[in-house]
Length: 169
Image 1 (cartoon, rainbow, N blue to C red):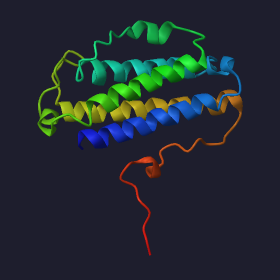
Image 2 (cartoon, helix red, strand yellow):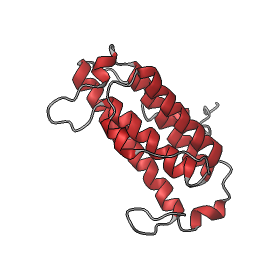
Image 3 (cartoon, rainbow, N blue to C red):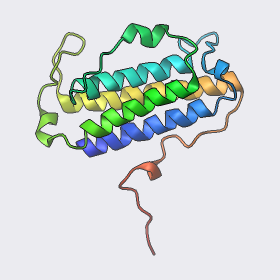
Image 4 (cartoon, rainbow, N blue to C red):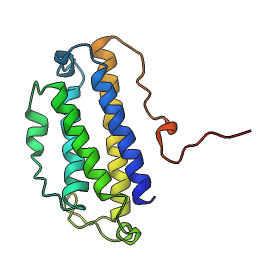
């Protein structure tokens, strides 16, 4: 995968998260933690935004973002608008970093240890895509449980990818 391709998939997922958050009828529902689920939708949104702003924006793009992972899991009742702004900040960090990265960087070791180990940058960027999609699915499930609304928000649509064009004829 190339930087632009990875960025396109990540940004599609971040836009899906925004649609998911907007699909909650009330902000209080975003912060509910039903029995059997470990996190609220708000917690997942903060975690995903912080994760991308750190691993892509700060480490790869040099943005200077200082991650507070503990706060991603401890903050509560953050307004929906602020959650969405955090997701948009993550999208900017991704779009400002990955599309312009030299392809050779993806073959190199990621600049900082991950889980106290070295990992290839391309593999780690692919891991970040999978991590984002995993938690996006959790957020979707959370919304459906909390609201009782099984209506989808158009997640995982290939038509949102920049290279997707209609077939003519």
